[in-house]
Structure formats: C-alpha cells, structure tokens
Image 1 (cartoon, rainbow, N blue to C red):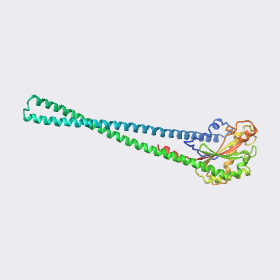
Image 2: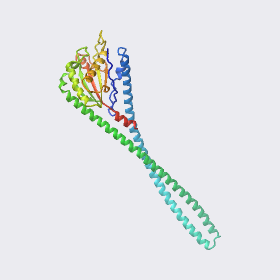
Image 3: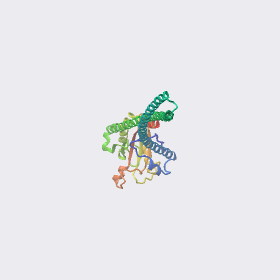
Image 4: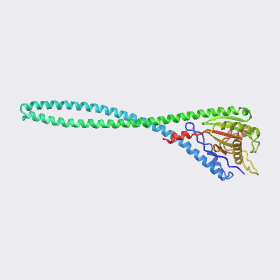
Length: 342
C-alpha cells in the first residue's frame, strides 16, 4: 500500500524564475498512478504555474507603472514650466494695461477740467472703456492660469508621492530578493558542509534557479529495484535533516527519478512510476522520523524516467539518471505580501 506523501506549496522566485518541476511529468501521468496522488500533484503544479506567472506579471507591472509615472511627472513639469512662462507674460501685459488705464484716467481728468464734452474727451473715454475691458480679460486669464498652475502642481505632488511609494516597494522587493539569494547561498554552504563525508559516495550539492539541489545517486540510497533506504543513505539523510531543522523557512521537494529501463513488477511496484514515487516517499519518511522538520514543508513526487540528467543510452547515463533530488526552496510569503500591496 502506498502511503500518501506530505505535500506543501512551493513558491518560485521572481528575478530568477525557477523551472516548474512538475510540468512535463504531470502531462505524462497514466492510470498507473493512484488517482488521488495524481489529482494532488496536478493541483500543486497549477498553483506553482499561477504563482510564477503572478510574480513575473507583478514585477513587470511595477516597473512599467514606474516608467509611466516618471514620464507623467516629466510631462507635468514641462506643462507647469509653460504655465509659469504664460502666467509671467500675461502678468506683464496686465501691468501694462493697468498703466495705460492709469494714464487714460489722468488724461480724462485733465480734459474734464477744460471742456469735458469735446470729441477728444469722448474718445479718451471710449479708449478707457476698451482698456478696462482688455484689463478685465487679462485679469481673468491670469487668474485662470494661476488656477491651472495650482492644479498641475498638486497633480505633480500626488504623482510624486505615488512614484516614491512604488520606488520604496521596488526597493523592498529588491532587498527581499537579495536576502533570499543570501539565504540560498548560506543554505547551500551549510548542506555541503554537513554532507561533505558523502561527496565520494554519489552525493552532490549545487545552487541554481534560486534553489539548492541535493542529488543523491541510487547507489547511496537504494539497492536495485528497492524502495528501502540503505543504512549509509539513512545516515546521509539524517545529516541533511539536521540542516533542514535549522532552516524552518525552506520548503522541501523530494523527487524520485529512474532510468528508462522498463520495470515489470508483480508486487506493489509495477513500473518506474511506482518506483520513483515510492522512493521519494521513503526518503520523506526517513526525514520526518529522524528530525523535527514540519511535515507540511515536505512534498514527495515521482518523475519516473522523464527528467533525465543524461539522455544517453550508456550504462553510465542510466546510472546518473537513477537518483533522488532534494530541492530546497526559500519561502516567498513576504515577497508575495509586497506584490499584493500593489
């Protein structure tokens, strides 16, 4: 009877998008896999796809919106400068008209003291009325441009605030991504140090795609066709578990891989799908039985022969492909919170 593996949600990085680990394998599942396990893994794959797409889209949206806001602020700055120039010119004209108005009033006063009914006085009065009309028009224009200037300045201040806020969020996102990279690097060093004694027994540790990959060859863990972990493999997994206990914010994906030689079993292991899934489950049980690692952090998956390291047909290629991969991924909860806030 196959025990149901513990599953947990994997969340991929934004700046270094990790390949979706379950993509091709889910498409290749057949009726040989228990229906419940197939459905669970299919849901996991869908969630990973959605989260990865959300990270990419949100990051692109933030950068695009920042560019738009910056361009808008530049446009408003130019518009404000133009309004200032127009307002200044209108103000000069307004002052000139006021001077003309004052001069005309003085002239009218002089004519009134003489003969206020002559044609010259009447013409001055008409000129004065026209000047007053122009003066009022210019005054209205000055007030309208001052109003527009105030509106534009307020818009710039509002957009500047939005831009500053988005810059702060991008900076926070950048800081989190850098922190995540530092965590991955430190984790890789810790795992490598803890497992250095198994380096010549078919165990390698590498960092890529924002994750740490611990590769354990079949010869370190299992006898041919077996799902029982050998004692030396148990020791390696115990050492790995000590590191995982100290890093509670790391999700753990256990993947079983086989070669492409068909396996025909009469017992509970009927083919390579069964073998890969059950080996992954065996490793999960070793980790949970020998440590305080929270089972909710663990996901067991089998990929059969469909994710080979070496696509060759030689015995050496097949040996490389028979393996367990322990994939360690930092949780991205805080990064998602920053993205959601936008």
